[in-house]
Image 1 (tube, rainbow, N blue to C red):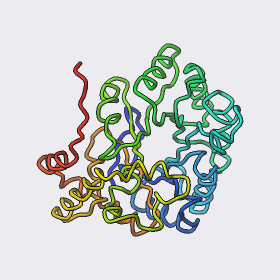
Image 2 (image 1 turned 90 degrees about the vertical axis):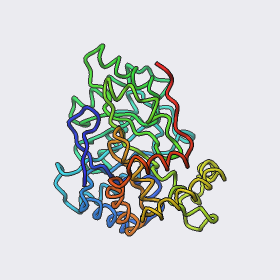
Image 3 (image 1 turned 120 degrees about the vertical axis):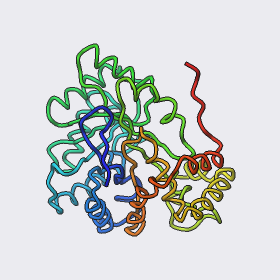
Length: 330
């Protein structure tokens, strides 16, 4: 396993990590979740990603039970939670049960610790930006949680570059602890934010990235090349919006070309897509969302495939994708 510093912090995360969105408490049984975490840990994964919104807190409970059962040394792994949506989702939550105001941030942190059965969270994310809460309130609250020892580092998820910089400006103004990490979506079809929008932040305040959806919700596995198979993630009730977004004909045609290229390279489409993400030096870790043991085992080979992605091969991939973000002239 390879490890990389999370932004400018001293915390080192494994380049591949394991997430639980749509799997723990939903798509897979608890014994499979334990097998997945065990395999990941044995392969050198030290970061396990979670959130209050995943299965309404059920995902954190399952992960917490597994961590307690395995008895791994607390200093050998990193656990995260994220808050904004609330346990019931935005539609069903009361105003005090969602968002980034101080009351919810503190109670969400306490709730996550209880579900995990842990004394502290390594990473605590603001799962979205909240237009209804002053950024000063958010930064002060997260700073206080760190000072209290309940959180070690805090970050953001799906925030804009401007919102992240506003948080850093407040932190600098009041000598507070600012965010060190952003969790954005990043894959061959979703590139602008990681490759262009955050370009200056990497250089200035520093920004670690924990990537979600590196396989574009399964599209980049190639399993949708010849139709829509049963039992896939995009078939989960309530994810119709994701299905419509992912399965555009133009994207599928590109995946077919990429699948052919992967075959010529002696690898698979999923490994090519994961290796492509890892190739970006501004990517700290790529979160895997496997639901099967053999699938997770295979995904670890992407670290080897990354080394074989020469400049010429990356150019071939670029010519197929034909979607390289254009940076604005500075």
